[in-house]
Length: 259
Image: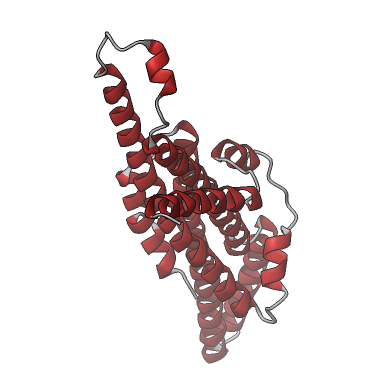
């Protein structure tokens, strides 16, 4: 077997491997992922159910969910880099191919052009286009998984309902009334203790609610960023700035709330 045949065989093998990888990947593109965000379900997905099945306590659930988010975030960063590299190579190959066609002598007969052996650059462009689609679809799936995990975490971090606030208010008023009655009945030491406990309980409850609110706001900002990345991907407008957003945006704030 000659060296040229060996090179041709290697290129053919690589192309078939890429095609096989693409066939194994579910054809979920950025448009499908964006559409999925518009049809959310209150039920936990099968993917998250598998993660939750490994948890026994609330702290384990939070930790596993944040780990799941971080895994997909890093995977999305990898595929975004691959996507941007492939996109640049596809543009360069297309530009070079157009330039070579325009550079042909006008006197060359069309039949001569048709009889020319296919240039290897055509295969390279096709290979890069497959890589571009694979990286784009993988990036879309990771972003969608991130959005799904953040939605679950936001539900867990949501502040308590107004019914809980009403109960706390009733208990606080009752304790304050009891403290005042004890004060007027000359049980001032006990009254001070009751009032102090009342104030401490209310402060503890609302500080916890404020913390939950801040946590929810941080997660919502991250969700907005992830949704924006999916929309940019759908429009073919992803660039290096989006990758910087993925690495450096408010995910740092999310890490602050990580258990």
